[in-house]
Length: 165
Image 1: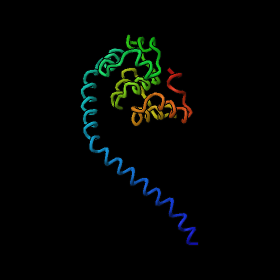
Image 2 (image 1 turned 30 degrees about the vertical axis):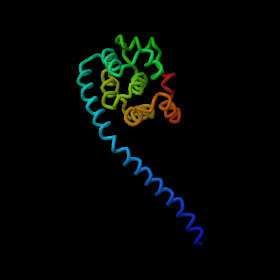
Image 3 (image 1 turned 180 degrees about the horizontal axis):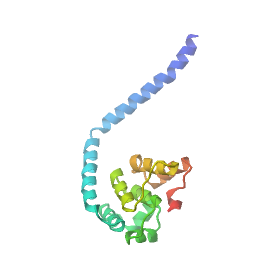
């Protein structure tokens, strides 16, 4: 009987130890994280002021210039074709899929992505799984890169961004 109890405790101890390691790693990151966080906040405030009132294409140009990203780099980072990126920069309205791909490529903080969506009259409400997945990507996984985002999308039964755009 004691061995059965012991077996039940071992996984719990392992979980506690794993949680302790996670907290330690988080604590170690806190030495640089506040500076990085503040830099992102300051950038977000400044860039949002710059793109306020712009059309989507002009905002995209500004954001790409700010991130020092060429049209060709945008293609490899977002999965959007060069011709699509050029059309978007020229003023074509973007789809939700395209904005998610662009936001991931540029690693845009959530509020900046929301600004881009608003510029195109897009609301990602929670009426379906795809919209919910897109919102989670834009809020929690915008720095993960297009390949990892496509893994998340596939796991949720959504089309990958490279083929959706």
